[in-house]
Length: 123
Image 1 (spheres, rainbow, N blue to C red):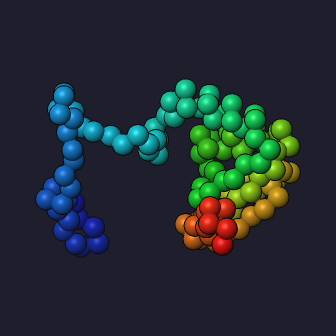
Image 2: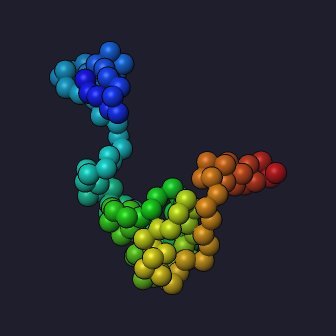
């Protein structure tokens, strides 16, 4: 329970945290939450892909945390073309990475849906 701007909030009745049926612990999504570490095997696989790619699409991140920025930085060192779709300026732009060839502040979901439609449906 908490109070915010004079409004009493009771979250205990609104949030149902699922438990693991095996051990009773809290189930956690297979995502990296802010402040958590990216598993080392995931980082290694991502770096492998950055080494192979000829372009890198960055979607919906300011790149402020190193866990995402490191891949863009590596791509830039390799002179890989980088495209960014994000509201507002990113760390990569502030640091003037030379490989940024495209930047859009379009709605990420709408732009990705448009791209998918064109690629998959030929629209």
